[in-house]
Image (cartoon, rainbow, N blue to C red; front, side, top):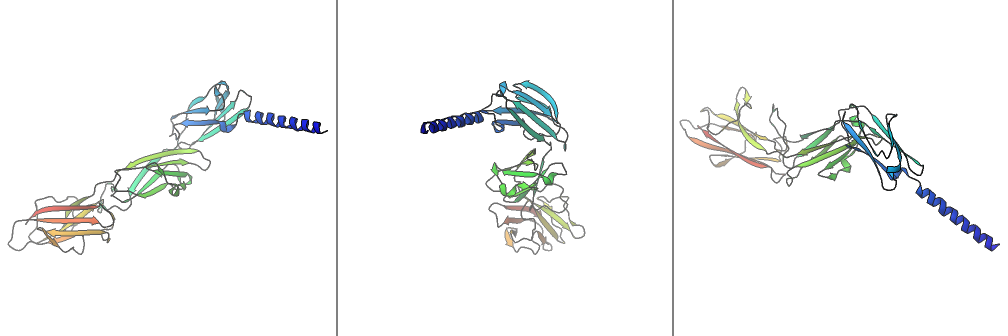
Length: 322
């Protein structure tokens, strides 16, 4: 009786090992990887899909490729397949069925929704004068905002994964987070910002990348007309002649931060003829009037700096006649 029990246990163990081996030998879906190139296709371009596996001999497998439910190609060892995606907003459903040499089947599917991801950026707190038509450059240690534009009305419903200089930014990533803000560093000559976009089902929508270089601030002098106001159409150069009745000069610190010139973070220091003078009530305007009967030359100098940063500082000198 005891011998029969031992035999029964041995037989059960052999059956378990056999079926465990058989189960292990079956091809699993996770053994095969379906990839596309490019990973984030734009609209109306050619895409190549490919299969790879470390455990399944795909060269001996019968592989069928389908697009949007229609069989496109079927062959033994057909590990790659090229096709064209549609317009922005359309979906291409790529499906592949693999019949391995052991008779098992594996099904893989991917949905492609092409989108052109435009990356736009702005310097959030950089100063430019009124009516300036250009783009405000990013100041040193300034705040920069990058926006990913998908060109689709569903853009806010996508998931955005942000990176800055190859560093993942999980706190800034997620559903509907189509923008990323950061403060650049004076130690860096440029910043690379990237995002990958997917929908709620895990389908890749697209990717964007932009390189942002900080701009160089500049200070320009302008004449302020009593009636017309500041003449921003033309900056002043050395040799400007001061009106005997007096002039008001305006300095504009392009691409300085913060944007509000009245902020306590911006310091202005003025000097006339080499001697420091009191900062005017309006920090970027200086009113001067030559003494009656006097003529000659002099220098007007202004130094502007942001006391919250290390290197956002600049001096500008204007040589004038009177």
